[in-house]
Length: 559
Image (cartoon, rainbow, N blue to C red; front, side):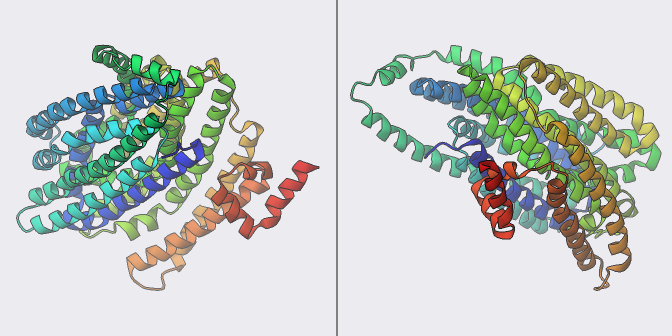
């Protein structure tokens, strides 16, 4: 079980997250059809509250654990790293039990307080998943610290497959009983998913134990480092927990930012909009936000999350060894990759929001709110994703460097802006004011993170090439808007909304998606030398369609 590099680890986690996200979007299609916007609102409330408590239950320990494991592994203290892992598992078991009981008990009070009492049963149905997911998260953090990303990626895919199948089947079977029970059945899919993910992680943990045992046996012939590891293996759990919590409390505050924002929205949308549009319409708008927009807006940040998980142990290892050049190089690299890869996804979803929404979700209940609000809400929330991408990756670098105070400061400032702006803008702009408040939150956090990084290290993301990226974005936006109008007006060969929307989506995404790399090359935002440092599969793909690019780059480098 070899260690994964930044690029390989990121690719593994990105592919896994893409598959998992795609399955999650696929899951929403039958659920929207079965449950409608009102049912999806209750489902989204349960899921967002559960997600926030899951972060609290693990107390940021997976990321803190990754940092501590990578540091000790780099220094050869393997036995101490294993003892830290065992201590984290014990904590996760206790925290999962406490949070499960808490979520089950608080469900009716929370649902009543946000004017969505039908969310009580779905929240309680999802509560048992908290028993296993803290343990799964700890195991993922351990493998991440050992720079082994395959177990994490595979467990995400298996978890999502079982979750999707169970959610849809139970929702369909229980719909004849009542809408509330159908939503609860959809929520219970998370419990089945947690069991499947746990099975995958246990398999890899046993496999890694056998590998470590064999390696220790081979090195047991009087190696000094092995003896040093044994000598430090009696590290007290009290000391371990002290170090873990000192790191994890700031991390949990940072890690739960997005989940907390979505939970805030789930809690305040109905309250803030009911006087403007009526309570029933406010719930439908909430269903659109949590059932459609949040699932699509989460796609562009997939690579950023994968990069964040991969970069923390690498930055931690380099920073612990005072290798500041590697810290600077990796910081610039991870920010550049996240921006260049996240931006096209933001553009494609925004430009094709109408056809994408119609094709994936449709309007099975014939709701006027769905026709009016769906595409604009998807566009507005997806725009904020580009700031979330930079916030996520810059925060991960700070996390790897141990700059926890800056993370906490950024989160506090961002959430304060989010709350204040929501209450100020909602009466004026409605749901779009609440989404604008989310975007402002990410902007504030991004600015704070980058400001702190600039004081600590020198790094370069794109330099003068920002102009080319802006030009590329402007051209694709103009072309995409015109193309969206044309295809919706004239490309309707099937005479049926969903097939027509599928064809329109393909045309817009194909043209805009193909134009993005071409414009990056024409504006010299991406150069031939950049292609030389891309992963092998991408170099081979470029070489197949444009072999002269790579050969020309090599010739120029050699000349």
